[in-house]
Length: 221
Image (cartoon, rainbow, N blue to C red):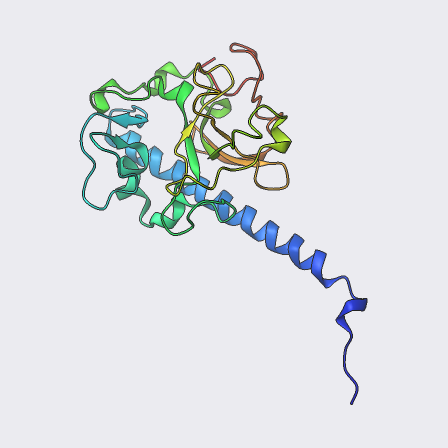
């Protein structure tokens, strides 16, 4: 009986490439939906951005079960319609409950505020179309966090994932390495304050450039 010897065909790498591209597009769609949800949220809150966290207990069944604090995924939860939007298909933490995207803490202005009224206003962002709001993020392992960004590895020991995105200028950059994670062939998906989303390299996003640099898309310019 004749049969096919698939070892003579390069189906493996081709399949992996197609699979990875599909995951990248799914992630981009997630980030785009986060941007849309945030635009609606902002319209309901006098054009203020969603805060990174507010000082009040989270609701029952919260995406981020933190004592005494409600983080931005739970503030946006009613605006997204599907909790899977918060999960990148390429993240290494718990795929059923973790968060795979971080909010740019430099734009949020503070890790924790008293209420939504303390969040930044859109008018404070000089270049909304060039200012990152959310992006692929993860905790980086201690073993790799001082290496070049292309060698960072996700710390899978954080089952709830990562919802905070710190830039190199952050004072807790090494103490709490929750950073941009270019999961998609060296690129990351990012949502901007103006509501659009793109897939870009860390260099294109200006990740690591000094504050105030015209190509740094992590501060308020």
